[in-house]
Length: 483
Image 1 (cartoon, rainbow, N blue to C red):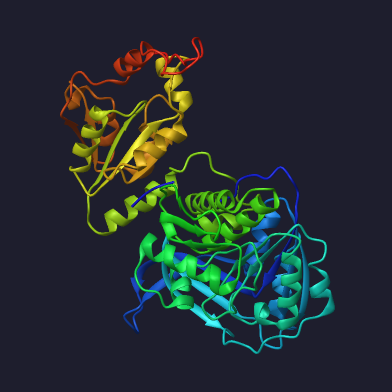
Image 2 (cartoon, helix red, strand yellow; image 1 turned 180 degrees about the vertical axis):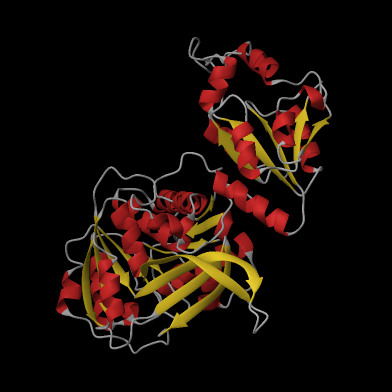
């Protein structure tokens, strides 16, 4: 388990068309503390009932929240649920032809962070819809196109496919395919299938990067597209473009709860980056980073806030730690926490963290923010920013989540998730630690783990200060790191 919505901010307001199938998404959330008396099923006490435009409508929502001029090219029914979808897209220009079918609705019931059931209404595949002249004309003046195919026929309409192919000669087109949908049209900039979709389109076996490499290469040829990026979930994506070879784009480590919308976030951000001048690999890198930030900040639920999803500076957040803590406690496990600045991570830190993790079933690190470190150690510290320190900590197998705190002590952070054990490395007793009183408020225990003398950030920084310039460096340009 790893901790960490949004897309990287664009300096240019772009005109983007989103083409694809639109549905109504309903999220019902609540608590469950009892079983029904007439059947062994949980009773959900509903707390929230949130609705949003789904499918291509979700992609349009994301891009509009990013500040772009968005046109949604889709088909809609003439029922009340289609009217509700329109009302949920106040900042999007909707150009819709008739769907000829009831509005599909997907209702997900969740208890805390766990999905209980999904109820689908009207989701049978309809016939390929007719395309209106307005739908075609909407593609003529845009800077980029995202095709969000949800397998309901919009992306299979021949007239619209021809319009997309002509548009691809002028602006970047990103195609997010669907297992039951149409294949991308030739000449688009990049297609972004996930592993399951790539396997369905190719019948290639295997898994991971070797599979993604072979599948991406095969699909570039089969579809006649400029590039294919096979997304690998929390690992990142493999990009093949037929010219510069294959590139693997790793994803930052985050704790992802609900993955709904992550692929949409990636495709939308790739389109923005391409329209802003990035090459395919850099655009996919931006998309992977945006999808990771989106998941770290709470995923699709963040879109329900009035202000919309905002980029996140630090991947580790309280909600990620709480998700880890909830899962461990639900399984009857022990939650361990430790804390510190962890500036210039060294072997002593690694040993202490490993020993702390061995005390229980998860380890949450309470990390001093940059402001907190400056207050404790002076204006020249920290040497590494909190973003880098979070990333390095999460790269360790023994760390499950990170919580950043601004105060000089982690007491308030500890009160939010109440660990069973507070572990601290050092040459002192548990009774001397200020966290002992805090843990005592809920019956937690404080444990010290072995201290490793001779290893400290201050000593390491002092050693680096006296290291001469690298070979070939211009004298006087070397960076001096303060202790």
